[in-house]
Structure formats: C-alpha cells, structure tokens
Length: 193
Figure 1: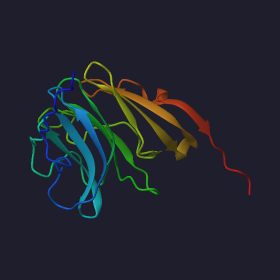
Figure 2 (figure 1 turned 90 degrees about the horizontal axis):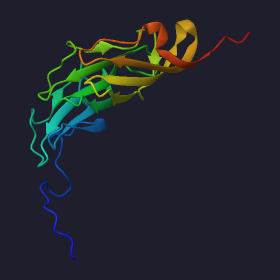
Figure 3 (figure 1 turned 90 degrees about the vertical axis):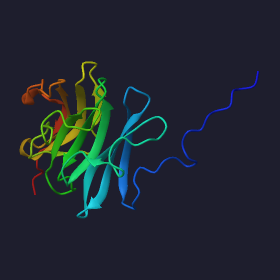
C-alpha cells in the first residue's frame, strides 16, 4: 500500500513571521488547542533593546494578529519560556533589564487567545529586584490553567546560587511563600584576601 500524498498548505520554506528585517531570537511555538499555535520571540526592532513579541497562526499559516506580531511585554524584556495554559491561551516567563551585569526581574504573564494579558499590564513578578536570575527558566502547565516555573537564581544579599521554583494559579496568584521558593542552593562566602 502506497502512502497517501501530503497536502502542503504552507509555502516552500515556511511562512515568514515578520515582513521586515529585524533581529529575532529565542522563538518558541505553543499549541493553541485548535490546530494552530502561538509564536513567541525576542525581537530587536525598537530602540536597540529587546522586546518580547508574539503571533497566533492557524494551521494553514494565516496570521491572526498584526502582520509583524504584537508586543507582549515592555521594552527591555527578554524571552525565556512559554507554555499553553490549556484553556486557549498561553503563559510566558520573561526577564526585564536582563543584562549580564545588572539585576533584573522575572515575570510571568498569561495571555488569552487574542493576545490580551490576563495577569495585569506587566504580569506577575516571581523574582526580587536584587536577584540575578538566569534567562533559562522552564515553564510547565499545571493542568488548571496556571503554571510552574523553575529557574537558576543568584541572590547577592544572601550569597546564594541555586534553583528557585514558583507556582502561579490560573488567576495569577503566587502560591509558594517567598522564603520557600529556593529548592536547592549553595551559600558562597567571601574568601579572605
């Protein structure tokens, strides 16, 4: 029995995410529950700083939102991780002021299927301003339209480097008390001169 021919619905080489030549990094695709996907990426089109952008696409490559995507977070935001909220939307973890020598804040934001934020204008803060968290956070859906996030975190005030975890409910409530979110860490002490 010969295999059935495949119907190619997209153009050869795929569908371009944006029409202009901006630099994009860290693209991720998250299923939308209808055969399409939410695309999330870090974009450098504005003021020489990154900004998180997104797009929703149908299975045939049709774009639902603005031609070149829509901003999902403020200027200075960097992509980290994205996951479906299992309710027709998605959740994104991102950093703001994420440079190598500057403290920054990690946020989580939940969006509906139209790209509208559900957890306030900027999302929910999950790290303190005095932490230097890694950009490599991982998200997982909790099965109840919220998410778990785990990340590497350096907290200079406590001289602690380790892994932190947090859970946000569907409504955006932080469920783990701050003093319990460090799950594994190492205390560093200054060496005598």
